[in-house]
Length: 387
Image: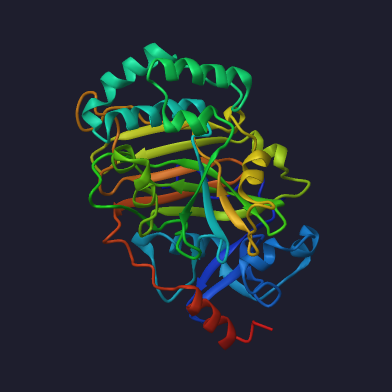
């Protein structure tokens, strides 16, 4: 990779935290980037969840811990092709938090969700259905406020034409789609393989901003994520969302979590421009773009739909905010659109957060998820970090 920097372009100002697997303690450490090294903050914050509950980012900045070595060395060791299991490598920057995701939050990808549903998961039918749907609905729903009187009027008209969809319901209706993307501790990080279920023949990456939200519902940081998606599986039935979304290594987050502070505010998050690069071993190359300024519901609205009197998260949660990326560039056959191939390298990048890079493979051949909640608790006890 090194087409895009793995680190923020203003990292001197950034408060970057995350998690590293340290073979020396046979477990994960909560870390902070300090200059050109990584420091272990586990004595103060045994889990990343504990750190995100910290109200004072200044305290996080002021803390120091034992060195885990040169930052660049850990970054390099996080990639499978150069990985040394005896040395530290990056993990996803979340642990005990629930991993939640929002769908259909951008008008551009909304139309593609409707097309998936109409095609019943058959990529070969997508092109003709796309033309039919666009002729009926149009291509620009970006000015339509979800849940507004204008949105409800469009719903009425589309129902009359038999074109209403469950995706339109969450895209322009009063309630957003919020679902569980992955289990705590199951997400992978920078350099790891990401997995596709072997039944899928039509799939794509979903480059997204991921918020860190604490137990009080406060947005405290942001990272990058790949909400790996199986278009054919979800297109057959929305009730298959779990199978389409939650598989081994199907959720990637990283490289670090950037804490909100004076140098990086929620307003900065709302202005992020997210780039996507897919490079195949066959020479295929696809570039995409997603602008947070085109999101149909604000981050605050999406967080409020997730946590509140109706639902508590005592360990906080990660929240994928959705994507406007809807790949229609043909790869396998004319009119079939994009789908992954084994070995694709996916880079999701933005200057303020760096770059998240992963290689695509079958989820059954990715390293299995074996380190769960009980393992983490036992490891922290053995290290004397739980008090």
